[in-house]
Amino acid sequence: MLTRKYLSLFLPAALLLLASLLTGCAAKNDYYSSPRDLPRPGTLGRSSGQLGHSGSAAAYRKDDTPEMSVAELESAGDNYLSRRNFHMAYLNYEKALAKDPGKTEIHYKKGVLFLVSKKYEKAADALEKVIKKNPEHARAHQSLGLCLFHKGEYQQARTRLEKAVNLDPELWIAFNVLGIIYDYQEEHELAPNAYAAAAMVKPDMGHIYNNLGVSRTLAGDYEKAVDAFMQALDKRYKRDRVYNNMGLACARMEKYDEALKWFKKGGSSAAAYNNLGCAYMNQGKTEKAKACFKKAMELDPSFYVLANRNKSKLEARHQKPE
Image 1 (cartoon, rainbow, N blue to C red):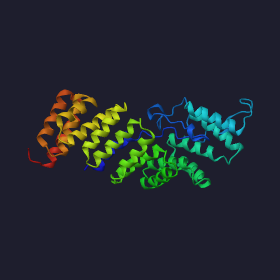
Image 2: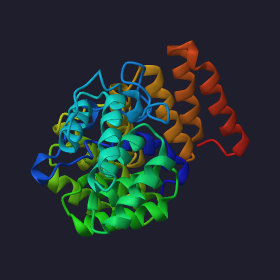
Image 3: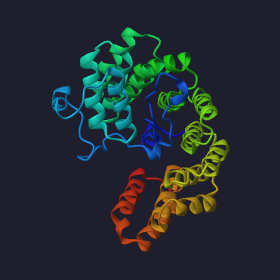
Image 4: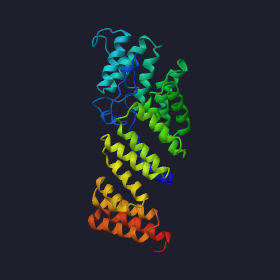
């Protein structure tokens, strides 16, 4: 069984979320897209502006723009959002709300803007107001769950996300994050079903299968983990993390030559030997681990400090040579 220390290595790789959380009046108008095609939290630059108190409807001068209706302002905000101009989207939503403060869906969209810009407290405040007005707003529950997840409040996030998928079983992002939470809470028997539900909605999202593979690895089901990682690769999700995860699963099955092959696909040869050394080390295979760390240092002197540190860990364990 892998420990939470290992899980902490997997979680960042699994957090490819926040893919198009907004929806219009019709559910079919969702802006779903591959997560890699969308801005990640924290990547908003000067070109798109920063969200916050500095931007407001007052920033518009009457002679700059013609008078627009609430619907037109919301549509303009959506248009800016689709072009990733978060600052202008925020301003248009604010101006729309100044005209009609009761527009629940615009409050929801503001919450999502705060979420993707990592302003979690503001996002939670906006989303809680939406849920108070409309307790059946599934996507607001999902977005609030993501806020809580990023804040490390996993049980509260789980409650919100489970509510979201009960209201709308098409919310694949919620299912995906629920799988991560179940694994973190060591309820590994629940996670595969969550990932499977996500994959049913979005079968071409390779990162879901990577997450499933991580889950299987955490549960000690390494053969199924390899199958899941292969599915991720078949879906063209060919990332270093998948190759390295595959290498770890193979090493756990003591298929070390195959593990090394995958580790090499996920990085340099030196990194591959260091990774294999760590796998040996965690299985108590001291001498083989030392040999791998030595090989890593020979291939790339920059691994000297890291590999030496790993060797020191081995010596500290006072384990007998094989």
